Length: 257
Image (cartoon, rainbow, N blue to C red; front, side, top):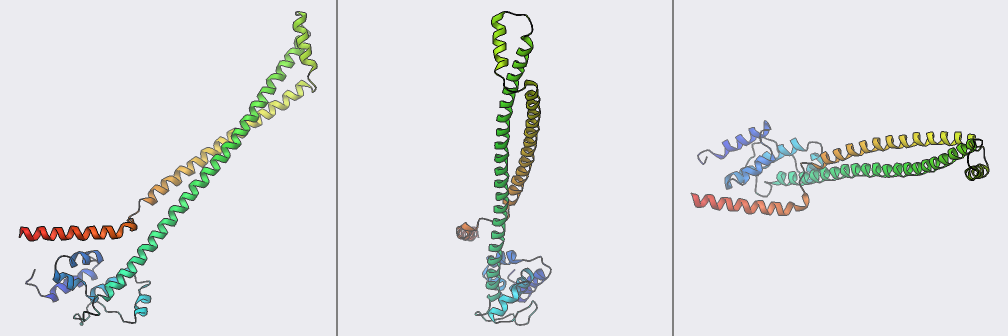
């Protein structure tokens, strides 16, 4: 590796970038391999092309604000000064951080939208369940009144049948306490009972629909939360940990040599 001159290694890196087989991650990995690769991988002629390739839509703003012109791959001025070398790598880092933060915020907004949909489905389910409970209570009262009226109607029929006087008096008393026509009221209650059953069936169907939508939203939320973006709150800790591990690896390699 040391026998090859810098021009050949630079050409290899340029070809890799042109064919998109070498990206910013590969350059960063090369830069920690040795001092020579660290110097070559930081050249503007490489990072300018990666910068334009990855962020072509908004990189013109960064370059114009910096006041410098682009350096393309294949530029003859590879031996730039140390003050200007690494400029495009810094621009790439700035744009990468902005793009990563933009993706993180977009991901967070998507999660919040799905969570709000799940909360709305839960609210509708509770509301429908409350309406169904009220309708069931109404149905129970209707059933109780209907059974009472049916007993009164049976008592009205039994008054005309021979039976002990004490039983007949009780049945006559039940009939006399009724202020409305029994048959008319029974028909109304039967219709009301049928309507209550239809309402409860509709509520149950609506609950099933909302539950299905809620489960679909929860599955979507689970798929959205499985995101390739890491937890950026621990970026510094992760970077410091990776540096420590790389230093330990280099020490181990030096000892083995």
